Amino acid sequence: MKLEGRVALVTGASQGIGQGCALALARQGASVALAARNQQRLEEVAGLIAAAGGKAAVFAMDVAEEEQIKSGIKAALAHFGKIDILVNNAGITRDQLVMRMKRADWDAVLNTNLTSAYLSTQQVIGSMLKQRWGRIINITSVFGQMGQAGQANYASSKAGLIGLTMALAREVASRNITCNAVAPGFIETSMTAGLSEEFKQTAVKMIPLGGQVRQTTWPVRSASWRRRKRPISPATC
Image 1 (cartoon, rainbow, N blue to C red):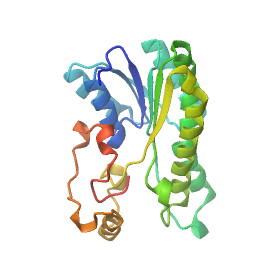
Image 2: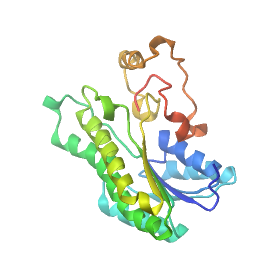
Image 3: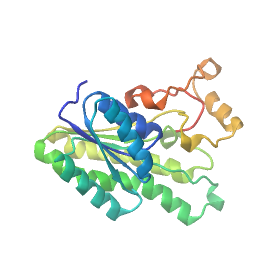
Image 4: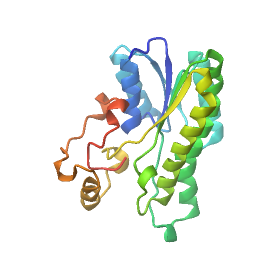
């Protein structure tokens, strides 16, 4: 797959899976618009891409804020002239049992993980429709399919993202725009660094191969999002 001449926008690109997506897209020749809250980390990722001969630009935004999404993507479109590929990856967790979960924690997770994908898609879809080509990739989670105790908000947001993906795919397929969801298994990232060893081992037992799974974490900086479809490490995504 070669992506020369294509422009990709990745949310949550400052670390973890998002950073891996951005680096992989750049390696394939795409120019990458890097979006996240932490400008310093985005600059570091942009530096890695530039050092490898790629092109990237930084657009700091909090995807939980609608106006920041609109202004950030508007700036990206002005800079690159178009957006061909959108990776909706930004996500957070606010874990708690439903009986104790605060409304603010529910709203924060749904706004960041699900509503931001809807808003970001709205902002780029015009560019894709105009050129009759586009690729939208939504990073969801296995917990959006199977649920997880203490993560009602997170699981709901990821299940909603799967539904959004399927509905949108039907809306835009005739314009040569595809929309797919990638549901990673257990990936070690900064989001999951605080998980207990007990939780990690329980997670491993949920994998069909169980104890036969090789405990290997691929370096995020060299990982392609396509290679992360299978559960490969004992942490939640």
